[in-house]
Amino acid sequence: MGFFNRQQPETPPPTARHESTPPHTAYYNPLPYQKKSRILSAHEIEFYHVLCEILAPDLIICPKINLADIVYIPTGTEERHWETISQKYINFLICDPATSAPLCAIEFIDPQNPETYELEMLMNDICRSINLPLVRFNIRYQCTGRDIADLLYPYVEIGYQECLDDDL
Image 1: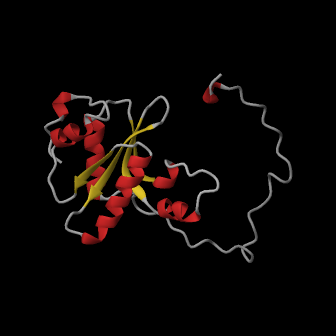
Image 2: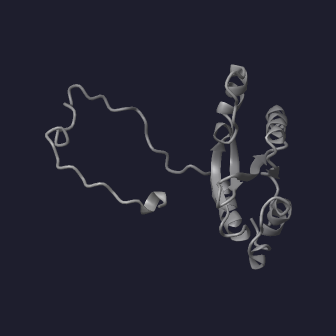
């Protein structure tokens, strides 16, 4: 049986431990974390919706994926390689629906920002070394659905033709 179809064990009766009260407020210090109002910028949300329209409907679109989630570093590899990927992310990752295998990475670039050049070259090297196609979109260029589909077509299945001319 699949994960979601398995039979659930009987719930044990509640015990005193399960019915305990919250920690005493004198000893409880709330953590300083707060939930962000959103995880994607307005541009990323717009791009995500266009991806949903143009890609085959069963493909998985993952926003803001940390490189460490898709890159395996063998045991015994120098720590600097882990540090290189642990703080970097890809704007969108398109995955196979059956296996969740990464098919294509999407990254936004700003060619007018010279500080990002080294990072872009590093991303090229990493994606090439793991055999992951990397498609970049200039954030200063107005894309259409057709532009996006044309660049992604070699790597992923494109879905609905009627959506390809929508502007982004």
